[in-house]
Image (cartoon, rainbow, N blue to C red; front, side, top):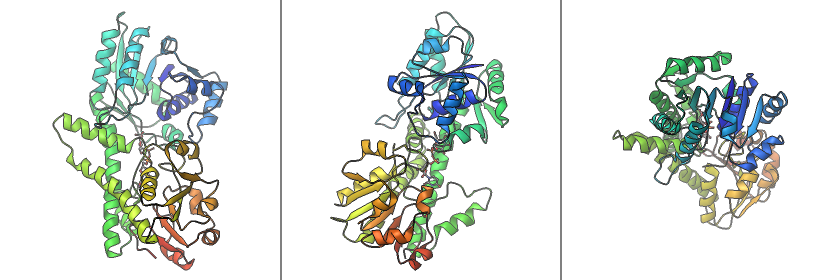
Length: 432
Ligand code: UGA
């Protein structure tokens, strides 16, 4: 089976490479000459663990190709995946102009029956619009189906998530498309949930919003814990044993970020308002998350007393570990608020520093954890990279001007930190 994957961002490139690994012939298309140029010489435009190896292997096996032309890539394709960006507009709605352009181009160039798969995260009813657009520009009346197949890949573990999915969601409107999609995903041997296209589109927005809700929920609980001196980690553990609740996504912290949760929350809110079914609860989820970052900065302020003129070392800039993605990273807002209060910032991230350089101003980017700590009045942990958990705390203590750590990801045990002589503040637990 031949696949044309349009869009080589985090979703398109990972999905394309993983389909090639399953044995399909995949052409990844992008209109960005820089990205296609890099991919053609074996360089990755993004950092995603395992991706480079997979791409190189499948290029060598002549199963994975790169092109700038939808017209060429679509010639022999059985499936055309739309995996282009749907960035947020200023009113929170998703900008679907890339999706529309691609739909039009597919319609103009397709030659034989094609399953057009909507992979980008889109508001409900987008599939219908794609179908209308393709119908309008499909002058040769080539048969086609439009399918919704939302992705559930987490950055940092995307290759694994594709290969071992909990489920695959496929929204279809015809038996022919259903059979084709079932055949496509059969090698993964996972449950395939077939729905109508609108339900599939809602599953994606509802899933991301629900996970964001879990995080804001536990962050709200963390604030109560802080008021009374309880421990949010113990609370989450106790709640998580109930299978109806589950422990995952109950990690309190300094807020969620990334290009998915904040954007999808906004888009789901926007579409629900537009449909007259206001999802007010999600406004609170958003508000709690924004406040969580402010609350965290206050915690740093409480540890330092006067922030102005102090040096703060920041550990972790990417929105989560194992990615170089800085989009909507909590570090950006936290650093800005600290700078507004007059702090000097020095920071370290294992992977995202080239991207961080583009979005952060007046931040001294350091080469290691220890250089970020050297001479700082406090060390602040924003992203839970595993190497931070293993850092040499005795060495850190010597490098800091004052042994103060403010931990936005609860990496350490407060009592152990106290024994080591740190002033240690974390989220939803008593400072020591
Ligand atoms: C998220 C979803 O988890 C994926 O299923 C989905 O496919 C993806 O969005 C998408 O729509 O493309 P991702 O944004 O890569 O994946 O990262 P997550 O692991 O979900 O983390 C998102 C944010 O929540 C991070 O900032 C993380 O630090 C934060 N988080 C996560 C918490 O603060 N607490 C938690 O317990 C879990």
